[in-house]
Length: 449
Image (cartoon, rainbow, N blue to C red; front, top):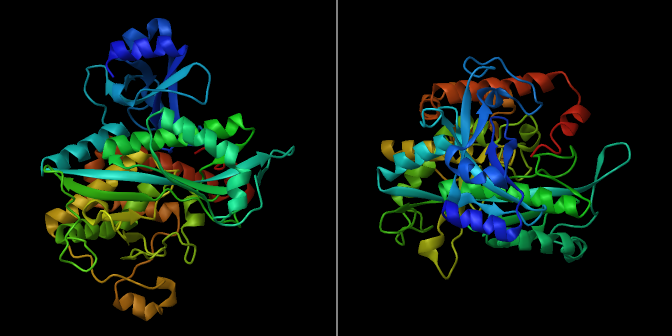
């Protein structure tokens, strides 16, 4: 839509407020809103935002970062292609936004602009990344004492769970479709109250925008049903965690899937293997972007089907990177990789930008991913894992952030201001939770994402 069409749509839909949304370094979706009287000018001028907001962590603790204090402003500039009337909240619409300096240049600390830079790097090689996030989430009710309890006590993939949640899920699918998102699958997951929904893949920037919309819609529709939806990695310590797995593939200018090769046993091409190898090599650092909360590492444990080791395998749910079986009816179009070491406490723009930077490094250097691991890595002895080069992923946010800081490829891709502010914000979160108990951790992650 162009600006005129958006204004007409808002008028016809009775929109009173339009949200200008962004995702910060702490993975929290924030924003400002515009009334209709000023929306026309806001579409061209944006909405002013203090630079300090990208120094805020998920506990709303402002961090002392040079250039992100009380002086200075950026503009939230809406991407008109991301416009949607919100079906789950009255008289509202929303945009996903870039952070732009007052001289009209992209702000170096803008996560969405970072993904755009990585997209341009791929485009220079005639490539584009298609991706989709799978969202696992927990439906909960709030008890009088303020704690949360699962919405139901049903079983994994249970039809009873489908029926109990049917009214919510029906409204969720309708709300997603109303915003132009196509639902691929839905089902109840392992933990009580846990569900998963996936939407159709799109180009990298669109995929990240869609994940912001998906997170907002899941929570919004749940709220209308008197429920809380948590996308936290581990909303209850003793229950299965919520992943935000990323499926991805690389395509050329002719519209061909670069990952596809009919001559190989698994249909994965040599270039696909190079890209995979880049992601695997940088994975210890990459998880600081894809599993970036303290709560993430409660989920990222062995034998949790959440990929605790930096390995890949064919349909191996304990591998960090899964070579997914393609559809029989469209092998060429559906060969893709799944990054399982990812969750929805991440900023999707940083997660996909980091993934793309890692994969392109593998392509540039023609890296070999090594041997696929077709067993649960924990079933191997330490010596066997050492012989096969199987490394444990970081076991804490602190370890992951140290790995990121030591990774010159990802640090260079992020730019100095973005990398510094991100590391500072996430380290402040690690410090804030370090001496706190489990109840504090759960309470301060449950309803942030």
